[in-house]
Image (cartoon, rainbow, N blue to C red):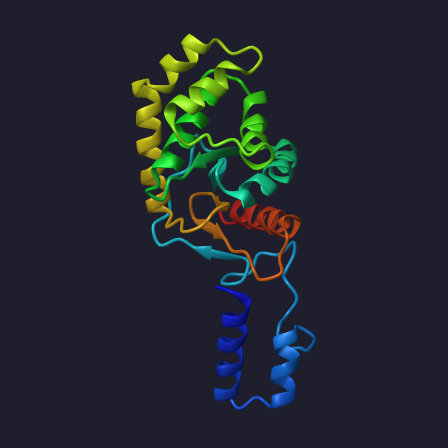
Length: 226
């Protein structure tokens, strides 16, 4: 929603609720008490997380955190570094990333690229893909474009990369990823799921550090409820 549409909708709703013109102006400008500050480091149902209707089973007895993302998403590009730093600090938590497609053929290509990188254990290529798309303006949205780009990267066996990219293993991984995105009702990225049960919410004005601090709080809550 664009800012102008948001303000018009907000003011109309406040007016219907009998809020004064002064209060409406303060709320619209973010200077009054009508818009609360984003929550950080807390687990509050309906504000920082939502409970999923159909929770997924635990993975190997450990709590699992999933990040749904796409290389093609600029917000995911910005989130990648703080999420990686956060992931490295986690103990006794399984952290996984899951590519989404939302039915876009271009994002299917990027999902196959992600799983190829994972299967071939080429972690340096992960950040390189984000950089290629969002900093260098490369259009890695077709199979051949991806394979040509990968072949130009240091330490990549182009023939092996192509074989893995087109493999049944990658195809099956993509099918599972799409099924997971539907099961968890992922409608935007980046999105975080904790313990197969809690979907993290991003309030207006919240930054990535707030989101990750709230994720920590939900992880603590999930452990207490076991």
